[in-house]
Structures are given as C-alpha cells and as structure tokens.
Amino acid sequence: MIVVIAGPGGVGKDTISEALCAEDDRFVLSRSWTTRAPRAGEGPNAYTFVDRETFEGRIADKGFLEWAEYHGNLYGTPSPDPDDPRHLVLNIEIQGARQVLDHFSDDSFMILLEPPSETVLTQRLRSRGDDEQAVERRVAAAYAELSEGRTIADAVVINDDLTQAIGQVRRILEGRLSGGTPAL
Image 1 (cartoon, helix red, strand yellow):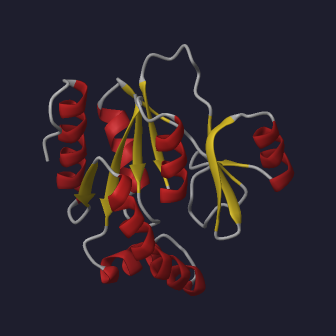
Image 2 (cartoon, rainbow, N blue to C red; image 1 turned 30 degrees about the vertical axis):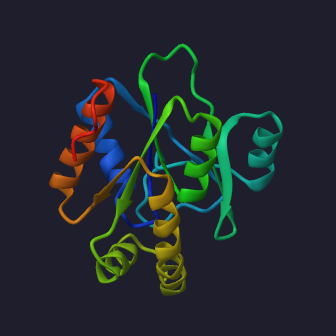
C-alpha cells in the first residue's frame, strides 16, 4: 500500500510520517527529491537536494512516482524498491497526492492533514525558518489546497495536538490494513 500523508506546508506531514515509520516497521518513509535549497536548520536527510538538471534527468528516466513544481521548485517522490515489502509512506503536497491517487488508485490511501487555524499555520511556517514572503505565499495557497485535498482524501486529521494526530493516523491505517472502516 502507498500511504499518502498530504497537506500544505506547515501542517506536520514530516513529523507525523517520521513518527509513524519510527514506531511501526511495516512502514517506510520515502525521501523526496527537490531542487530547492535546504532551509536553515534542516537536516541533510530531509530531502535529496539536487539541481534542476539532475531532477529533470530523473523525470526523463521515469524515476518518480509523482513530481510537481511548487512555488518555483521541483519536488518528486522516487519510485520505490519493488522488493521492499513495507508500505510506502509519502508526505507530499496535494498536487503530488492527486498524481499518486490517479496512477495507483487501487494501492493508495490518502490522509489529509489540516492545521487547526490560519494563525497556527502561520506560526508553524515562521518557526521552521521560512521568510515572511514565503509564509504569506504558502498561507494564501493553503486553503485552496485543503479544499482540493478534501475532495480526494480518504480521511482527514486536524493536527492540533501532535500526539493525538499521530494516534489518529495510526488508528486510521490500522483500520485500513485490517480491511475494516478506518477508525477516526
């Protein structure tokens, strides 16, 4: 199964995806590629940082499950190892989520993460080192992304409390894996 954890920047995709994979070895986190520069304080394993030419070469080689241009930078999910039996977890934006769901509809499941408020989203974006112009641009785009995300998501989690949000995601996926209705 491909687990898509999607939402706009600042909703906690990375944190929740990393926690899920750290707590449950049935899941493996895909490390996305990007052409953007690392943010201040961002670890070297946050993304595979490459130049545009390298990224476009990977596109030409059909080496991505999905890719998109977002705010002037390219982002993409590399194709997984077909021999890995674990469920692949993707933490991606809505544009990429739509591609994955369109191409892998029988094998994918999407959880949309939402912020509890615009104020909290703005604070989260500022705290991770985005400059003010980037914060304003991302907040302006966030609610259109969330509206679209609600139309394609299998489940929605509001990340107001991180521990509770991780628990909700875990319960939803347990319900999906057991063949039942996802527990919210």
